[in-house]
Length: 155
Image (cartoon, rainbow, N blue to C red; front, side, top):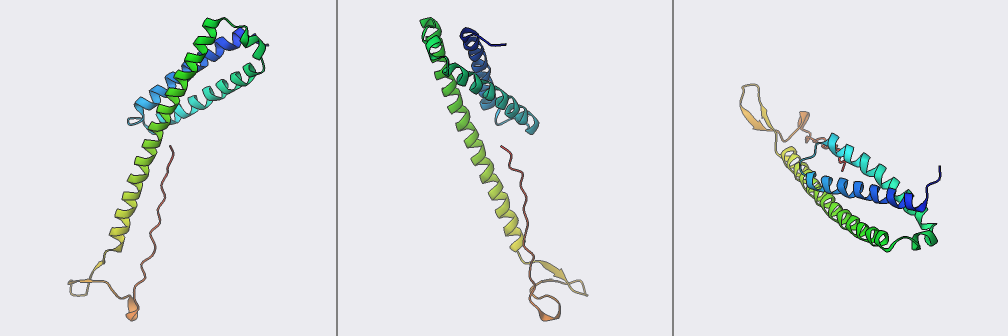
């Protein structure tokens, strides 16, 4: 079924309001979100963004009809677009801050693990006395294996 330009504008307004609401909820809850909640936000945001983009593309092909809309509707669309851009910028800033914080935390953990791995290892001899392991068996220097890290960085 083909939608009229007016119906598409109404749908675009609805989708835009939903997208703004979602962005604001995500921005406010970013520090407290569980992974499953965040994944739900990403899924909803993706669906709404695709719907928004499809409507905008379709409406761009109807320039003549859009110019004939009432001034009140045009003004509402402009205001809504500005509000959406503002919400998107706030959301992007919050996401970048969370990503940066996450990266710093992961780097601090990796440094701490590396520092701990580089410490001399304490050993025990046959009589139970402690010593520092500096040589491997038969007088060879010990070669410490590299430390492997795997971090799930979904954001």
